[in-house]
Image (cartoon, rainbow, N blue to C red; front, side):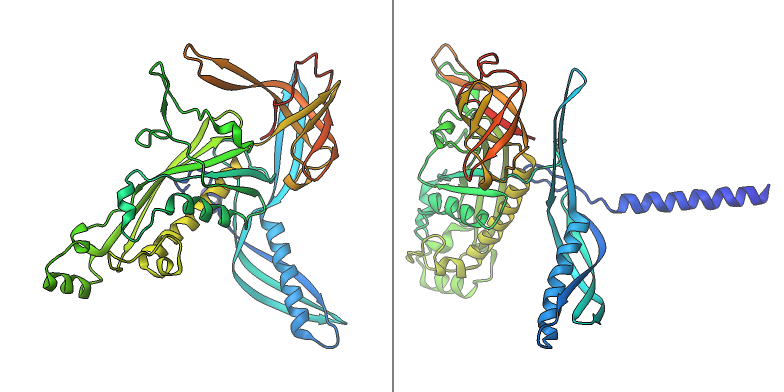
Length: 423
């Protein structure tokens, strides 16, 4: 009896330890725009190899390390993104795609061997791996077009200090430039486009009949999958008197006391992601930071200039923009890929995305019909209706693709300007 109890107790403790190990791999989800699940930290080992040419061991080691890092990333973060749709028990869509979305940290060489003219390097690394999204999608690796519209100022007079009025368009440009480094995003700079007539209620809009809506009526003019916009809510000083002090002694003291919080300047924005085809608000987030503004009130610094970037305030804003860029990449990964139908003929359908978007022959996309209707005041609203049809791509060009559906386009009333999607 005692032996049985001991065996049971040992088994129970082992099960408890195994459960703890499982749960320890999951971290708490951060409050980002798409609320994706947090990266999981995984320890992996991988072996890379490099050819020794003319006795150059250093070059071979560098090549082997690069190969090992690639193998570690593939091993840890390759995941299968599937989109499956059942219609009357039949699998309509089954796309499978492997993407690498990982970051290697704490890389350590644990072994190195030379065999003939080949150097083998074994490494150990910690990998942060992006996993499934909380919206039920596992994300996709298609390249998505994103337009960055202007970020108007809720209080334009706050930009007078330092002559920062250019921040409205400069912020859009800064975000677009950051996302150009990402292979999954095709950013477009629309920094001169003002999307909101009333900044106090952005991005909610009031229609002529008093109804509130989050639809963006002019979204479709950009012909992009997604639109990023926002409003700059605050550029104020923590203590405005430090910039208007007329007393020479107090002004001198304020300048000597440059580390004081009275020199803090605030920065906060509301950021929105709209669907470019329907105008629907998909996500919104508030961001804020603050940094020391030590410059004289008469300085015409300008936004994103070398003088601006050298200030603590400029550095804090740039760090925040880096964070926003990371959140945007994660959010866009968890949103569907979509493309506009440009031409139809019998059972053939053409779309305005191709190789540049990561599409391949054989990819399957769901067809959505675009339905426009109008309210009593003539305000148009776009609705995307799932036709449950599958478009299978046959021919891929750099910026376009052609595929086929079951049946004819006239039978299903598929027309140019309708949409295809991949979740």
